[in-house]
Image 1 (cartoon, one colour):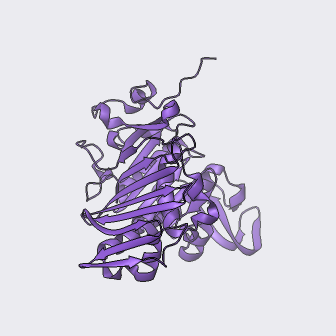
Image 2 (cartoon, rainbow, N blue to C red):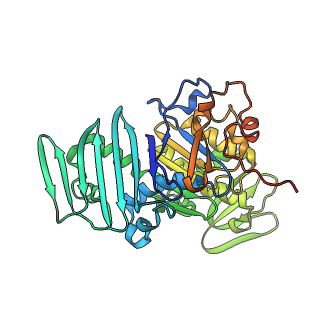
Image 3 (cartoon, rainbow, N blue to C red):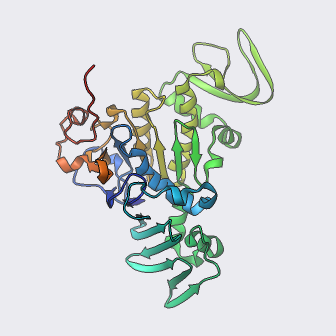
Length: 381
């Protein structure tokens, strides 16, 4: 699980910024902490344009770096901070994999087109890449690589797909954790990750059917169910198509409602559930941007609490404008970060737990009163 993320000169994060995902001394919401004592999730709140999205872009970057062609997407060049003094950006990731520490560092200079990679296991270097030469250190043997170095991509990616890490169980489990991770932009309806094509709602229903989603709806009293078929009969009308359709059927109505005619909230709920199920079942990270788009406050709370209660080796990273999810019955103060933009210094983060709020305090009210920062101040109308 991800224990720390470091961003420097990356998008709006001009200065080195460390974000910690390890638990602190809080005892509330124990279900929000994994067996490895790593937090199961974090929420980032703050004004529009503060840099919240750029935090989880750091997670997205790692998934793109390892599983997509960044040269084609031009992500390598676009990621540098536009108002930084230099043209090198850096990301560091620290993971806990079965009580082993895996640290991975990426540095990219967009002017010289030079890339640096470093991978460490329990503080011992496993891989080091400096531009067009790389070394792998394992079992008292050092291997040098030159011809296999991709100019515009990750050598770690090439090494993994060529060798599968040659029986290194820690790295194999780490890579599986990353392969099961997904980035989701609710507003843009965008899924990204190695398994992204498997968790689209139509693909999920084709492979898994409707039972689990309908069980979820029944358990939490959504008063509806879905069908996935090319034909449906109702009391007033029926539907027959040349391919399978996603249909809603309300408990109070015996007529099928096509997916495209349903509310935005219902459509988004149906799209996000397969993603949540996939990450919870397989272990991995689920980073969701614009989480507050289209969901009722109580539905947001339900989805978070469901993930925290029933997941184990999984993490949920959220960008949201909904302050209701800051309640101490939903998230802990060490799971909450305020993001604000500090002019020429770029984006900054502030962890709520730094203020040491008590368990009984109203965290939402404290945030809205400006205690933690990351609050917009506009002129009164």
